Length: 171
Image (tube, rainbow, N blue to C red; front, side, top):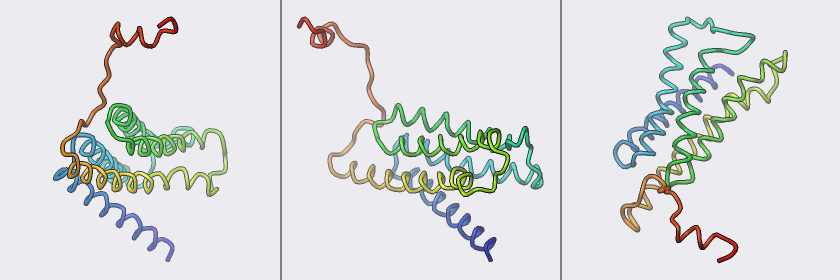
């Protein structure tokens, strides 16, 4: 019965991510498209990895190398988007991915992996990411309706002489 519930939970998550992906392609801007493509891509690559390895995980010192690689690539993409996007919800997605990525270090430190802490670190981030993505996509669509178009990415530039003078204590 527990396996049936876990399978249903996984299929529900897959369905929600697919809907978010399609909606992001239709109504989202670049950050939404990149994030949903990455979330769904990680899921697809994970399924392919399990098909190719036929359930036999590729382990190194207790660390599943396939999941480690998938989470490392996801972390790099999520953190990059979180730091560059003109939105706050990617920070939640990046933070959740950092927790998921950290779960791969756990087997190196602890021999008994049966604890709820490990399960929370490896499974729960996907729910946080999916929720943040859904809320962020809704917020983006609302924001586009009210004030209209807005920047997708933060604008960063070198300080000008005038702005440096304002920041200096002698000014």
